[in-house]
Length: 192
Image (tube, rainbow, N blue to C red; front, side, top):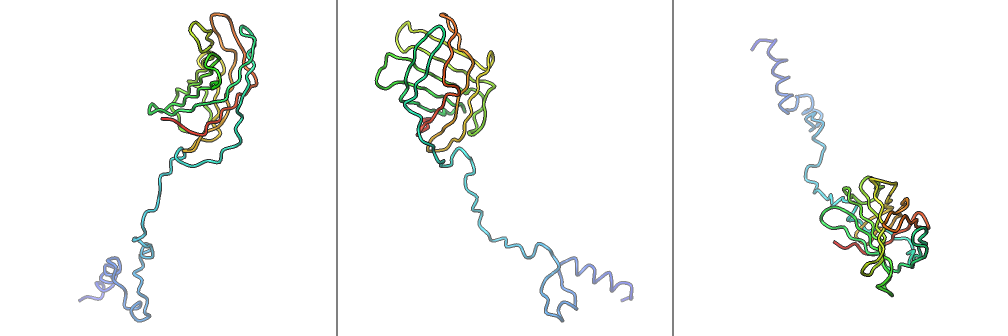
């Protein structure tokens, strides 16, 4: 074998993972591969990281909630129930009602843009206020026409909470305003 072939042979053996004679003498068993110290037998313990599947810490409920309605309907209403639903269509729906009287106002809020949990929604949001009997008055506002915003402070498997802010709602009888603003929402359960 020629003398110039020995360095080439050593380079090939080293790149193939073989140890050099010097490392055998010193007891060094590493092959020089930087990844050889990585434990490849570690199990993947990554769980579902969808924040909407987390359990959240809920603040104190704001219910019962009294809303003052001003303008074309000058009165107030009290809600003791808010139903939150997150149907498979990837939206958020909130319905405020008074469990003591079915013949009162309902407030409904629809986040129709893609709903991903915590965040601010103001692109495709609608608010509806309606009297819950036949021929009752109806008022609505949409983020396509006025400022309507839903801020979801947190959302998880055990509930959701946040606020709704809306400009005046329009109906056949005229416009109404709702106060206080922002309007809180708080749900201890999320329906599908």
